[in-house]
Amino acid sequence: MEIKNLEIKAAIQVLKPVSEVYEAIINPVQMSNYFINDSTGRMEEGVNLIWHFPEIKDIDVPVEVGKIVKDKYVSYRWDIGDIKTLIEMNIEPYEGNATVITITEKGMENNEAGIKWLKENTEGWSNFLACLKAWLEYGIHLRKGAFDFRFKK
Image (cartoon, rainbow, N blue to C red; front, side, top):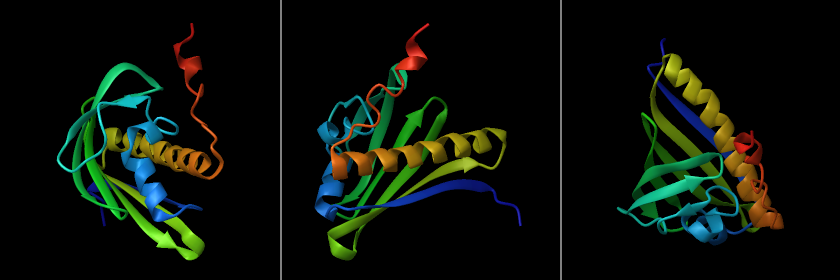
């Protein structure tokens, strides 16, 4: 059986309540501690935003926020270069006031470009989850300075 469309799935348990994890995902001030440099606004259903990332200098990343269900689900499409994909984040309570967040990204064909995307974004979502966990549980900003080497000659 041939796989026509590729999909990334990554998950992690965060030792914080669902409401804190959800807020960290939709609030750009929180997001700037583990994911983006800045955003033109808060993630709200139907809103279009622009994100900037520390590892991508001087590039606007358009984000179309899709469906949001408070403390449960966040979806959006983003456009990085020629690639426009759907990201879905499921946020579920777990034992002892913890939260499991599962991220799925879809929208690429099973071809050479899709395989490259699969590799890069699987690594990216693993990094996202580790940085989110470090920030929420320990107040550590893992991305700070992590990409400075890319811009020094």
